[in-house]
Length: 340
Image (tube, rainbow, N blue to C red; front, side, top):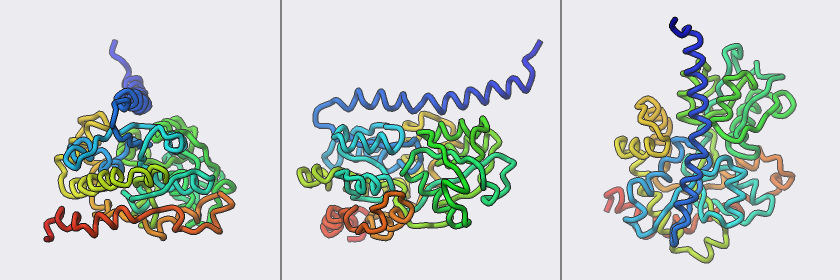
């Protein structure tokens, strides 16, 4: 007898969820082993998302070698662990967003030096019975990490709909984007915040996009580059060398689909053309050519922070633009884009 169609469907569903959950730890283990090489600049990233494309292109397109720096990308799931690794000195740079602000408010020696995606690059997906944001009142929403971009995105969205996060809508922190999707699919949560290309996996599982938060164009540091202030003081030339490679990677990310999708294929561990296109097209053109952090980006993070120090904080204390300014003043960007 053949396997019933509903059993085959359930099997495929379980296989997809298992694949999503197991890929991340594989990234992390392999990367940590490779990062032990002497002279490597270790750069952490918290989610397998298309938002990480410029960071991945630095090494995948060999831009690190071109500009004289050796880079090792390391997957560290979740902003909380990422921040801990950065503060402890286990990595030199990290692609983190709003979480850097909360870490600084808590006394961490971090500073943002570039922004990759200057708005919330997330979508809120829900189960079919949820018709709109108002229907989330009294419901549970899945979030990747507390104090990170994913939480801030949902908080900003709920506030726009006059819903109070934590009171009208409860959050559960699940650690990563794959775990959020798994909780959504199992009915543990009514909605969950997802990043591309996990958004495609959600639609394949029959869930719907409730709101594409990116389309609201709210200023925010979704992803960027952060480091320890001590490292920035001690190694300013290494910082600038990395940022040159990062700026060159942004140009490729915005203009070269073939090279970009090759990098996405490697880091997302897939050859599925639909997944690669989802990851690429979601963020293509969003990456700013000169990725300055601005006070507006920091203010937007402070506005959704639950740290009591946030209301009186000076936005200038959280970022340092001098490295990018020195690079731009040198004519590097004009030359890169053929303007001189």
